[in-house]
View 1 (cartoon, helix red, strand yellow):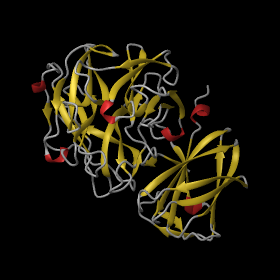
View 2 (cartoon, helix red, strand yellow):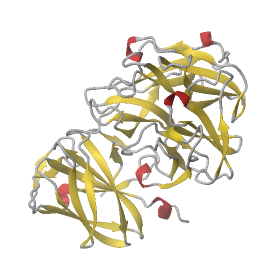
View 3 (tube, one colour):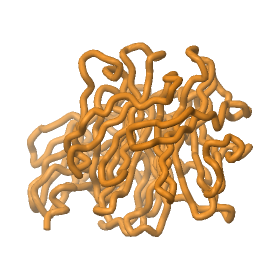
View 4 (spheres, one colour):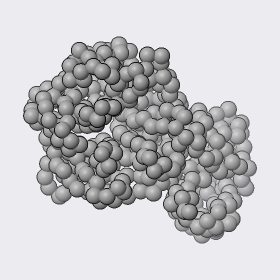
Length: 445
């Protein structure tokens, strides 16, 4: 059936998500993969797992930017793409910011390494972003150390003379000082992201240890005509603006983007897969609103058990309910958080579920399988396509009984295809499959 809803996460195994909507109508997305920089290109925000993707840069074998590639961001400035990222030589104390410049107007194309971008102090630096004012002036904002010891991460701003050069002294605009900013040691302010309204220049940042459940978002705001290099121009909201709930832990390091038709504002962020999961995270998205004073109102992070309307202007997707599939040795039970109100479970060694999927053209699709795994270990399912064994599908335990999505790549042929899953244990429940993509094929003219 066609549906206009989705459930988080939109990407598994991702952290530090960055997404930008370009004037060509595409979303361009990247996140930390650790040993390279990878960019995704999609017409749909929530179908990013099925998007066209390419590794656009790999680090040298040795050197100051050869290891620990963190939090890349893709910016379109003066007709070129720029990617800002943090890296080191294998020693964390040597982390600095670097920048790539596109050789073409293709975000998935070639890039030239412009090297390190730093202020005169050349201190430890990560999570750099660009603040681009309406008058054309550029500022670099990042998280860094005051000295050479990892005691506290603070937020700094400095002017830029061009997209790859800082042209003045750094100015501290925030440090961890409030109770919700100081969970974990060292104390942390990081991940600054710019969010501008008609009334305010906002910087949304991440606070407290990223390895804790209490990782959260804070807010700095300034008037548009103020001196952004004057710390007094920035006001810190005394409360966190996006924090953990009883089902969402460690929400942080976000980016912001419009819906396809430009009518809605969305926050894309990572969260821990469960309480105590540390750096095991996935990527989620939800809409947000605005306060009367021009600051954002994010509300609470929604749980993976909540279905959301697709971003405005995003086309409906195909959803195949588990309870409507061909079942062997499985049971249908009621569940109020299931998309159709029911789940399929009771797996034994002889159990199986089989869907028939109709697709308009040949291509590589992603099947977003929504499931609950309450077992203490990952579950492995055997998938056959058209009666031929193709892949084993592993369903993680990271959520400890919370909903998740497994994004399974499958090659499908035009017309009708049969997908069969077998295996699993009694502690596994399946809700539905959303059929995503293929992105490249759907954009053919």
